[in-house]
Length: 111
Length: 391
Image (tube, rainbow over all chains, first blue to last red; front, side):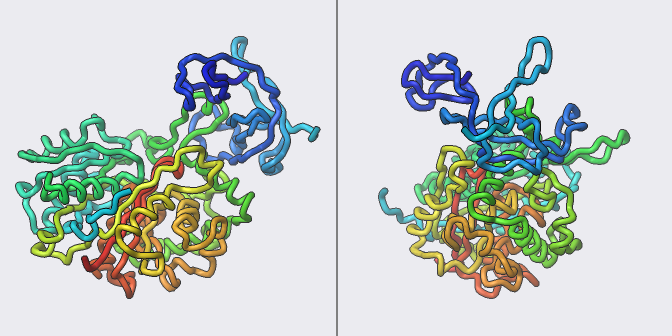
């Protein structure tokens, strides 16, 4: 789901309190395909939070969704150094707790 | 846009710089700011009572940053100011403060204006050996990004650099060239934190990754300290202690949008205004002090000022072109990567030293026209100064 402005229909992610285009404060959540491609990425080595100490080095990716918005996330099922810009990906949901599902991405075959 | 008659109307007459780096002379950023303002006044041959303007760019650790200029005024006992402001557009602020000062002086609203940056992100060694540094000060995350481990400015800049490498073939060695060239400059600058520490390309590649594609030596230093300049009218500056450094051209550019898309800074817009005001083109520039929070920022800024075409910043810096023996001297004091990190004041301070001809072993032979850039956010804000030895 991404935020869609009720005023002009622009899609936003992450969510904004008002639309940067028409300034409307009304918006809805609309489903998106969950498909996109790797727009850029990094490989984190510095530990900024103890929760990631065991993860380094790990990659953070920017996914450009087919619908337009960009999404900062992780790519699962691939080693950081095998990630390439332009790689097709699709969403997958990782269960973090009983209440939290975190959208992440995995490589997909080009359709 | 109306043409302007600001060219050469004002000048920088004083430079005040505290010791940089692990300097614990003061426990707060404001203490460093006060010391820097006093040093700048002394450098200009002026007294506190001569000041009627105070502009402050508070660093990250400044307490009560929203009214920093008032806090500093009170802390220094300054009275009867006619100009005061706390300004923040990140690394572009320092040059923007100088613009605000010059505009105010030219408009008759102030006469002698101090512009100061100070910060104190490093803490003295403590008994519990708690480490402090850039990770603590700059490692913040916004909202959902933290869930994915995306922390800090480094990580966002890395996205932009990675895409530049992908689209234009920019290589790790290109970033390394910038790091090594600037270290060579720093090795000629006794005020640089890395004055005594040479670095080869092999050292660069061997340095630890912070966030790929950035090695440790792609990232700027962390410094405690304060840096201030005094701006006054060209006429007044002529009667003071040092040769005036004239403000020939000034401009800003804040492109908006997403830097991962644009892969560019606000330099083109800022340059257009500043160069028109100064009446110069790129061939007139003798040396450049370019904002360098990362090696990559220098590469992009060189492209955006037109020293080379977009995407060709990598090949441009090859062969030591921007180093001490190169054809285009860039960041001649070592920059934020290798001298000290005072946000936008780092390039300005070095430009003043060069313009005055006081740079010792690193003095560039020709210093009639100097170019200075400031850059904030992730290539989001930009400011340009064109400095002249003559009005």
